[in-house]
Length: 80
Image (cartoon, rainbow, N blue to C red):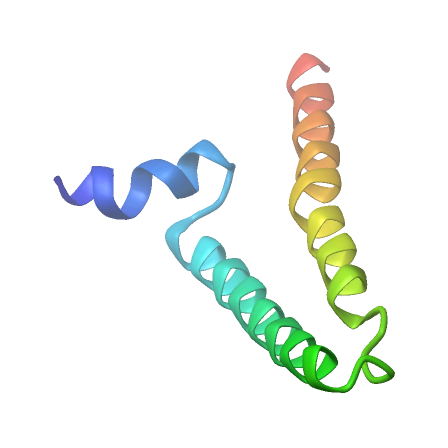
């Protein structure tokens, strides 16, 4: 039960528990700030015009592009 709840997912993405915790907290903080900007943008459309979409783009790059590059790099090291 402990392994499934705390270790299985971090291991599946090539991270330790603490590495995953740090990344997840960073994502959560970024999403929180982007959400605040979106709420303000909803009230005053001239403010934070691109903040939400820019945040999503940056987070996507961090999560998908960066992780794929790391995984590819690890696969290359394993082959040599």
